Amino acid sequence: FLPYINDPKLRGMVIRRTIPMLTKPGAVADSMYGMYKEVCPKVKYLSKAMKFVFPSGAEVQMGGMEYEKDKYNYQGSQLGIVLIDEGQQLLESQVVYLISRMRTDANMKPKMLITCNPDTNSYLRHWLQGAGYLDENNYGIPHEHMSNVEKYFIRQGNDMIWRDTREELLEEFGKDCGPMSFRFISATCEDNPILLQRDASYLSKLKNLPR
Image (cartoon, rainbow, N blue to C red):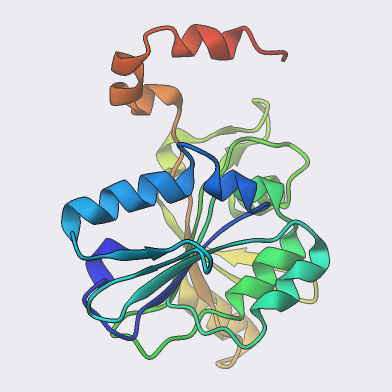
């Protein structure tokens, strides 16, 4: 959100499955507030509304989506950026609904970002596998050469249809099919050296978890 906080028309949303996951000590709300204060000391956090308001008028709000029906709480929203934290905990129908809320008057192209951890039963695994990001012959481990490679998709019914270029989809499904771009960036804890420096035992803690 930080590149856009001087745009008074920015409306952003940070979503996790439950509100406590956002607001408990040291969670997303605390991290956001500390980061925003460094960049913009006059930012205000309205705790009741769970919303950050910048001097320009830009706003970033937080919300939960514990139940499938909660997606309708966002009906009518116009969101420039949607950030879903731990996206594997949401349902595909919820994420698809939020995609329909991606529209804005701000000087930017609407976008969604999803953080996630591996979950073989998640819709995200099906998305990534269908787009060719995962090695189906190696337990679904991401292909290194596919990290950050742009792909394009449309949805027909409940199916994601993937192609390498926007033009392929337009030619195959017509000029009004509305292709959207997609990138998957794979990472492990070794891509977070600061975390490992602060807690040298973190990798061991992960290895001690059940398979």
